[in-house]
Amino acid sequence: MSYHKPVLLQECIRQLQLKTGGVYVDATFGGGGHSQLILEQLKGGQLLGFDQDPDARANTLEDKRFTLIPANFRHLKKMLRLHGVREIDGLLADFGVSSHQLDAAERGFSLRFDAQLDMRMNPDKELSAHQVLNTYSSEELARVLRDFGEFNRPNGLVRQIINSRPLNTTQELKEALDKMAPRHKAHQFWARLFQAVRIEVNEEIAVIEEMLEQATALLKPGGRLVCLSYHSLEDRPVKNYFRYGNFQGEPEKDFYGNLIRPLEPVNRKPIEASPEEIEENSRARSAKLRVAQKL
Image (cartoon, rainbow, N blue to C red; front, side, top):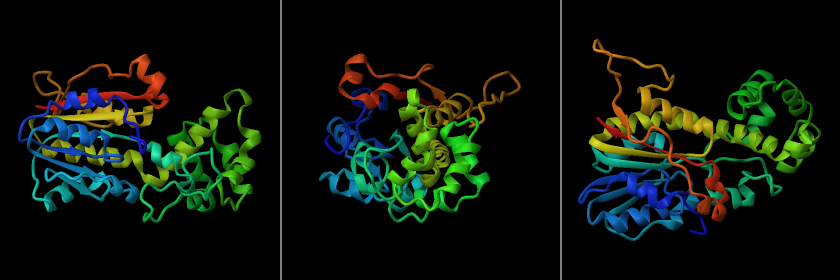
């Protein structure tokens, strides 16, 4: 658990409703906390874990029922077919950056450390935070900050970033924008800024949407998707897709007025962590767990 402490661990596994002999996917293997508990309760079957971060491979589980696939979960369908899997009974995804990635100073995910501007969950990926901040046009930077950092008026930030180029480290970025961070909300400012760049680098929202569609196609009737999000940008596509069958949040109905959707939400409101868990793990404060079942 030192690699990454899972949030709502027991509840995530409970919501999968594990079946003896079932085939399951842990789409965000990380430190293996979810996978280990799934295997303990599975009593047979098969579990396939996905993780694009090479650091996660050190956590692989020695169990003949388990296979670790070193790939982004946007390649879910293709990679499962390569392993002879065409249907699954359930999938669990714990979105966002892991505790390990935040704590690894050299990865550039956290403002706590001075490091090269990187933020790639897969170090082999071409696009990095350095490229986003140093080569994007003013229009592209404005889009990133507005769409992924929820800065309503990003133009001032964009001008300051462009005028401060080249930016090579997190410390240089901090010094360049320090005067623009509201004193009473500095933490939120930096969190939103780093979140925006990280999401752009890793295409996180597009990847979530691709995975949800593929997972739904792979699910057996009655199978479940269990998704844990940490901010509204991650939660929104999950909520819309579970509820309406699309990412726009626009209901489509048949002739009889029934919603046309492939999944049925299990919980209308997201499941949240208890005050006790939040006290032990601050990351749990923003967590929202949504569950849907294949019709």
